[in-house]
Amino acid sequence: MKAKLCSRNAHKARELERLLPGWEIEPLAADDYPPETGGTYYENARGKALFGHARTGGGEWVIGEDSGIEVAALDGGPGVESARYAPEGAPAIARLLRDLDGVAGREARYVSELVCLSPAGEETRGTGALAGRIALEPRGTGGFGYDPVFVPDGEERTVAELGDEWKDRNSHRARAARALLAALAAALLLVVSACGGGTDPTSKRVLHAFFTQSPRGRTMGERFPHAAGSRGCQLHDGGKVVQATCSTEVSLVKPSRAVVTLTEAWNHGSAAHTWFFFITRSGVIESVVQEGSAPPAS
Ligand code: ITT
Image (cartoon, rainbow, N blue to C red; front, top):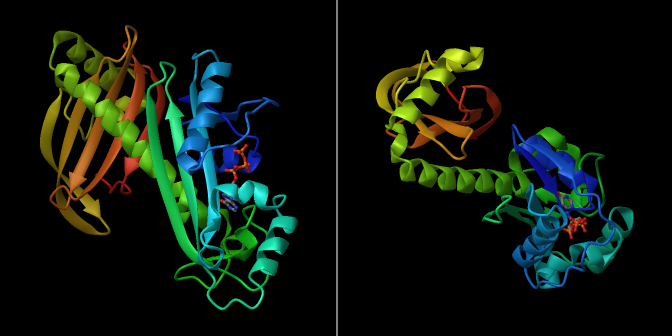
């Protein structure tokens, strides 16, 4: 999957590419983004995505992101105004520390809203938040923006000290990206059920091509049914053998393309890992998106 990120903030593009596995995220080069006039993160994120959709002529997937920091002692500010509170980096941090000078209650949270538009303009969104507090002085070199003064709940170090790997697992943007992937997955599953769940002859042919043509498809074929449906299997979760269900679905999304959806569900279905293989109908894998808990060994 390729998508244009409608943002002038290069940090966001780098983070999102790590957060959306299998996606190639390229910043949309434009110097005439409209002003952010929305009263909510969603309105601003959608405004950026719509700008990108119009600019690319609807030919590409586009993503808009709006985020900010909300500080309880500042009545939730700067919030959606975070980018305009002061120039990003040292000036914004200096102003925040000045505004909180002598204030004991330093609770805050980060919020991220992602809006994704398909080439046809269908909208999917994901929201994430990270609670914490504002430190007394900046510490650390990772991340960007307010990260040197943001200490997440349950931590003593700032996000800038905790580093990119921590941020990729726990940040407001990481949570928004997971919510977005889950929403996209749900939308795809609707397409799957609309296609009869892969039981027609074309679906059978496409699944056969997927499980026989590529090394990755053949490997997955050792654990998943080769026709649409489910079967019981055993997985190794943290050294324990658990009973699980392995399910295969296929959706014929375009005349020449399809999506093969493979899901392993275990612990009575409360944990699951799903692979979305975007393939040509001849079985060639073009990209893979994964969603859910870390997959146990088969
Ligand atoms: P675009 O509008 O072009 O996407 P921007 O930087 O102006 O880029 P926003 O309007 O969403 O982005 O403003 C978000 C501000 O909130 C950003 O400038 C940072 O100061 C802060 N911020 C957002 N996410 C952050 C993060 O992960 N770490 C630190 N600060 C963050």
